Length: 367
Picture 1 (cartoon, rainbow, N blue to C red):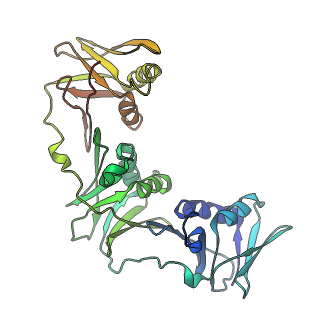
Picture 2 (cartoon, rainbow, N blue to C red; picture 1 turned 45 degrees about the vertical axis):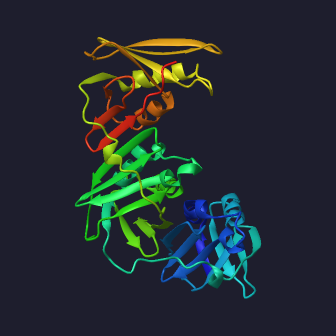
Picture 3 (cartoon, rainbow, N blue to C red; picture 1 turned 180 degrees about the vertical axis):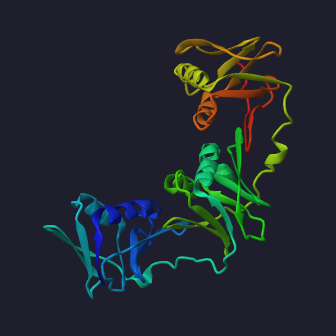
C-alpha cells in the first residue's frame, strides 16, 4: 500500500481518534491505529474495546489498497512534527511502514491489520437522527453532572432515552441532576434507553461540531453496544449494564417561590465565595431576602466572604447551603442573561427549569 496525504489533514484525523487508544492494555494491538484504504478514502480506527472511533476522509491522489496498524502515539507525534507538506506512506512486506515528507523520512514497525479488533457496523438503516448542534448541546448541559465514584458505576455515564420525536439525556451523581431534551427525526421503531459511559460522552463533547448543520445518527447494536455517526466520524461504545435511577421521581413539583438574578453576577459571586472554602468546609450560603440574594462563606481556617446581589424574591427569609461548584457548572452552560431558581426550603432541592432543560441541586447542611 502506498498513499499520499496532506499533513494537516492526516494530523487532524489522527487527533480525532487518539483518545480511543489504550497504551496500557496487555494487548499490544490496542496501542495501534488501524490505517486502511477503502475505495477512494483513507480510514483511521482506534479502540480500547470499550470505545471505538473511526474517521474517514477522501484522498485525491491515486490509491493503492491495503491496511496496516502503527503505534498511535508515536505515529501522531511524528506527523505533528512534520511540515505542512504531503506525506507519503508506503507499507512494506515485513509490516514496516516508511513515511516521507519534504526532506524527512522515517521507518515505523507495525502489526498486521488482521490482528486489529473488528469494528462493529450497523446491519439496519433504522436509527434516530439529531442535528450535531443539538446533540452537542445535550452533552454540554448534562455531562458535568455524571458521577466518577466507582461505588455507583451505573452513574458513571449518562442515560439516553428516545420517546417519539424527542431525545433526552440525563446525568446525576446523586447530589445533583441535569436533564436536557432535543427533537429528533429518523425511522427508529424501537425506543432507546441506554446508559452511555462517561468516556464516550466526553469524546462526543470533544468531537461534535456545534456549528455543523449535518445530523448525527444514533443506532443500537447487538451485544449491548451503540453506534453514533456524524460527519466523517463513527463511534462505537459499549453500554453500562444496570438500572439507572428513576430520575422522574426525584424531580419535585414546581416550588411556590423563586429567586431570579443576573447569571453573570451570581457566577462571579460564587467564584469569589468559593475562594474561602476548604476540603472540609465546602458549603456556601444563599441568604434569600426580599429583593436581594446574599452569597456568603465563613470559615474558621480561611476567613469569610460576603456579596449582596440584586434579586427578585418575594418569599420568606431563608438560608440554604450549597456546594458552589454545583452551581458554577450549570451557570456556565446556560445561555440566558437571567437565572431563575426554584427554592422550597433549606432541606429541599433547588431547581432550575427552562424549556427542554431541568437541573436540581440538593442542599448541604447549614453549620
